[in-house]
Length: 80
Image (cartoon, rainbow, N blue to C red; front, side):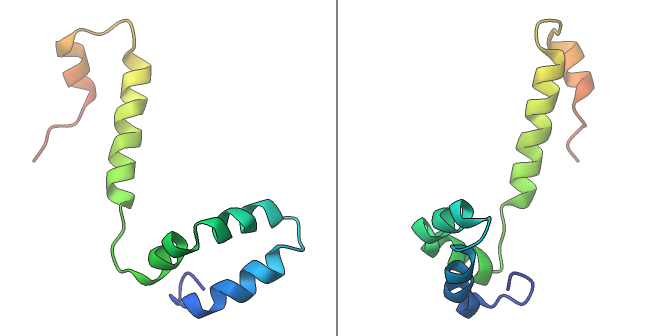
């Protein structure tokens, strides 16, 4: 369904998943069905942004309490 961008199969999947081990996940998908449908059908993604935020948070945790500005700058890659 995700790879083929077939949002028409979302409702049957939710119905099948409600009776399985992933029922709580299916209930969450159903509550936010419009966002899930948009994520399946829209061509754009915020994955690149989320990756950069995760990387920045990792550097922040690693350097917490022992970094001055020069050391923090050394831990981040230079922008092109």
